[in-house]
Image 1 (tube, rainbow, N blue to C red):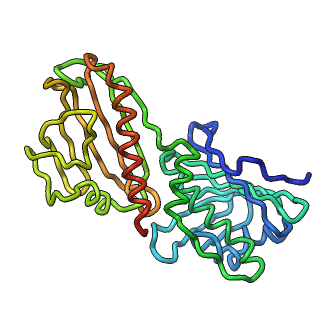
Image 2 (spheres, helix red, strand yellow; image 1 turned 135 degrees about the horizontal axis):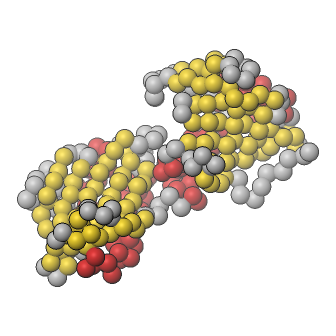
Image 3 (cartoon, rainbow, N blue to C red; image 1 turned 90 degrees about the vertical axis):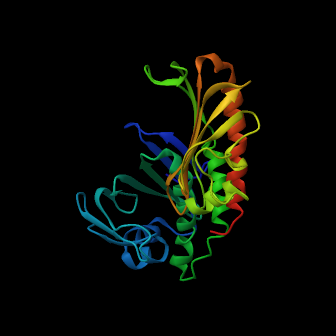
Length: 305
């Protein structure tokens, strides 16, 4: 069968095991036999894959991934499927990478399906694989690997394509009070950013040097849609929390957390809780924080990585 690249070259779905499946399809200028060499031979992999690879090319064979510059700890894997020159699959730590190669009129169509647990990290994975796969044709031609371009802009494009900028509204578990002992609701955003936590923190602080418990909340951590009291908790550069109010009445809490993320950036987890009394404010909180977080992400993406 002759493979044709679909109109949507990247998709994000839920796999059968409940994890996330990133599917990327790219047209290459070389026939499947040559692409297979790029996928399996260490000398070719070294030109485009993000690590050095040692692979026993058989089902159950061991795979070893060694990162050249210490970007992350070395990983082990296992080959799960081999069908030269059509299919190669192996584990990548806890993830699964499955490569499919189909002949096309002027070369091949390469499909990567990357299955993983960390859905908010999908844009980092997609921007990384997009950059890596772009090096396969030049490597097979004996040409230099092309520069990655604006990797931050690429990351943000994938965030939008996959809808990873959207927050959620959740009911708090029974017995978890939001305000005044009532059970309530929570707006939550988990957003991968393109800069490390220290840079994100400085950007949010603005002209404030060091926020303190009992002090004023820096404007970068607040939205004009909701009044707020003083800082209730702070641990630079990873945590800041405070209470919000409605007409002088306690409404709930806002909590900013910066945790370890994928790629080179921090993972933002922003939660805004409210009591049942203020259930009508859920949509306003969702919209206000979406715009606030996206403005932050845009400013960070404009900074060099």
